[in-house]
Length: 229
Length: 284
Image (cartoon, each protein chain N blue to C red):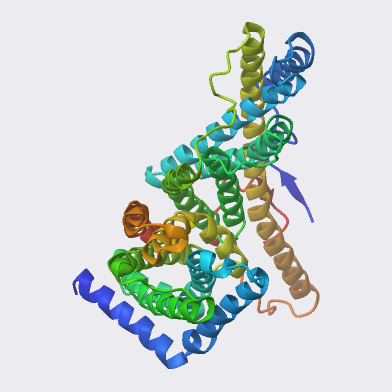
């Protein structure tokens, strides 16, 4: 079986498990929505347009918080009953496993981010301008791939260990700082927050893309040694 | 129950070499105190607060050195054929000392910043990266404590240390871009074009030399205590197994001769640790 086929099968399996258990749908998405509402409680003041100005950052922050849950979930499924060991024992290629899980995580994150943007539009009065759509979509793709790569990598590191729930945020949040910075600035440019122009956003997409490529390569190489017992 | 300590386990982690090194480091620190607080002049702009830098700069240098040592020994552990746990413990010891010195760097830097810039924290690229480095290696130390076998610990933490090498430049680069859009670096940097008095420079070099010796001393000792830790952990299991066995043998002898039902397997081989240190001769 080719690595590509393995990756597709792993991704399909993960998404199927997720779809049948409905945990992402019934728990993670509502969590993300409530975080967006809580941001409004914390930051909105009558008369100031604070929320609209910081909406891109809040969308990515809510994404990061929710991604912690999704990453934990994607490896909780594997760690139970030693499924990860079984996969490795069945000589499933580690790199293919990495990309399969990354793809499944990326698909979930992509849906989550799109919904968060809609929530931001509804609750914070964010508007998407037509000229920024291309930038927005490219940022969306690059940031999602980057987050999924680094999430799968660190999720695999903490998988099966005691205290992983508390360890994952400590490892993951500092690592994804470049995505938070880059994607927030790029989305600000795409939406025109604070008078920014679309062209300002492209260098930031570059940052996010380099991050995605670096952790994609890192994950391909490191995932095997990480999950092998 | 009788268990005797074998020759490989010493009661102290010191040797003649490390004692000499320790004394040298102590003298170096005493020198630093004398020059930093006494002989060196106060700065024209920063006045007495410049003295903080004699601790701040060497500890920053050391923290970076420590993390480089961690990365290199992790790479050696991961890519060498022997996968010697000594490299893993060196990486761990170095990271612990590095986190300590990075903490000192941040605290002294903030104190100095409050005196010189008027604020504790400036969202400067270098400061922000340093804070990230601090948190990242705290995470690294947490991963080392996850449990599992020594090999698992070594492999996980080695991969993480190498990922940090990937992560830190990315964080630094993105933070620098982030800041440069907002403001130029207007603050006085510790390494800026501050023209340095000869005695000040000398004091700083004394500080760096003293702290480097201190680092070496700390890492060597910490590495040895980590080895002793590992040995204790694996010997604890041996002792426990031996105790159960002795019990079983005793029961078997006292009550039902030859029928205790406790298998007399050798469990010790399942837990591979470095030189188990404690020889057990109470049972079997």
